[in-house]
Image 1 (tube, rainbow, N blue to C red):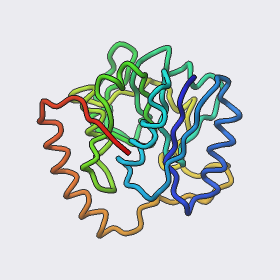
Image 2: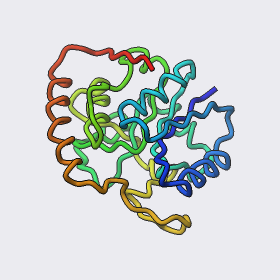
Image 3: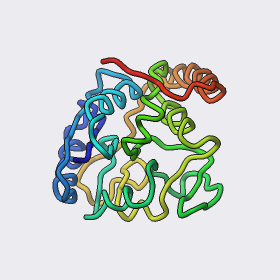
Length: 208
């Protein structure tokens, strides 16, 4: 069974409805679904998903403004790698190696990880506050120095943040509205990130 986790903000009910309809439409394998609410910051919300899906062989973590758009999206990932992000031409492509695009910068709307890789590196670093860097730190523990994405991922996944509203029937805007609080968190998170990537610590634990 695969595991699907989604972080959901309560002011986006149409996003969640769209996400769930697309998961049901395009997922042919048995799956366990876990929804983490916005009472937690992103690192803790993702950890909540990982904790509840930790027995699954393959785990897919979504923000609720990203969703599958084609059958075969599960196989697209699990047949090619044990860890990948959703990234596109808005990010800084560095190189292509062994069928993977390697980027210099990171996005956090989607992560795929298999059970073996998850057991190796563990959970997100829960020291992070809201607004960024938690996905970058998590990814750096998997792939030092770059962020991996399978080419043509956008044929299987759609991100409202990166690709726009399209014809999906939801009004979309970024969930970040308090820019002063965002900058304060970014300044704090940058220090946590630098500490994390310069540490020899690999595994991070989590207790709900």
